[in-house]
Structures are given as C-alpha cells and as structure tokens.
Figure 1 (cartoon, one colour):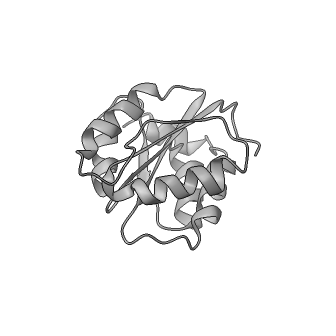
Figure 2: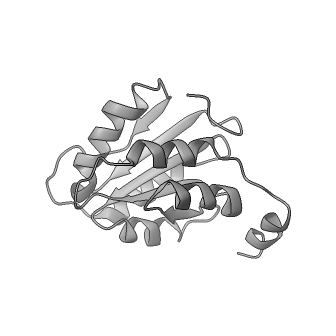
Length: 146
C-alpha cells in the first residue's frame, strides 16, 4: 500500500482489550499490504495498563511515521496519546471520521476501540486514514494553535 507524505513506518500498540483487534489488523491488513510496521505490544490478553503502550508508541512517532492505538473504548489511548507533544491522536469509528481527521487535523495516530471486537469496516477505515492527505490551508492555521 502506498502511504501518503513519505510515511516509512506504522507503529501499532494496544492494551489487553485491544489485543485481538491489533492481531487481526497486523495479520489481515498491515502484513497483506506489505506495510513496514512495528508491533509495540501488548502480546496477550493479560491485563495491562494502556497509558504505558500509548507512551511507547508516541515516543516513536516522527514525521515519517504514523500510529495505530487500540484499547477497549479507544478513549483511554486517545487521551493518553494527546498528552504528548506533536501527537494528534483521533478516535475514529468509521471511514468518514478517519478521512476527516487526516484531511482537517493532520492526525498522526488513529485510535480504535477493541471492544466489542468488530471486523466490519476496519479495512475501509484504515484505508481512508492512511491514504488521505492533509488539506493544509486554514486547517494548518488551526492546528498550529493547539
């Protein structure tokens, strides 16, 4: 899959509640699309603390990478990620929200819910997120105020 704006690496991480969806995305999406990705854990459904995994992912994000974070609701990892400088993490529920957060907010981390585990529309959402370019213009002015 061709990624926008010279994205070289996609980092992916989850807590225990997102482990199943993370595994599915790695096997059925990232691997099949031959994306360069790094799995930052967790590696089981044993209970862990999501802020640790969000922090690890955010420390790796730079101008040539993007991230996928997953927890039970997607809310916890979104809040945790957005505490880090230069991170614009967005909780997305469908292809439209994924497209708009890239287009208007230049989001560099997509946050997803792992519960309930739902495969439907995940590929469309990730495709929309990774293929959409930032519009810049008035949106650049707005995100510079964050």
